[in-house]
Length: 128
Image (cartoon, rainbow, N blue to C red; front, side):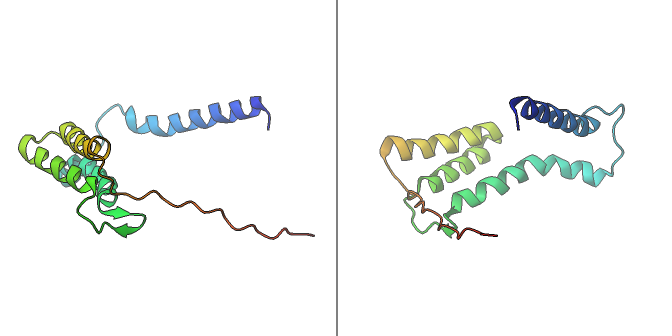
């Protein structure tokens, strides 16, 4: 595949993606939807954030965190306390990340072990 082919494929995929998404972003009028769905969509951003953050807070390499010395736990608790106090999503993320970074970098508390990367076994070649 030449550089021109790669460029044209990237531009083409970008254009198709834009066409698919613009149908939702540029409607001429509001889409009719039930009240319960419209109210439920208000919770979608926080639910998506929780679905991404929660497993990262309590798991390490597929196993539950088994020590209280993990800075992610304190960062999560600080973020939760900040949200209960101010009800500000950006401040919650900044507070939790700040506490975690101070504990990990500033104080040197390391809760997550370095992952072990092993080489994949070589596969036999197929002769045919």
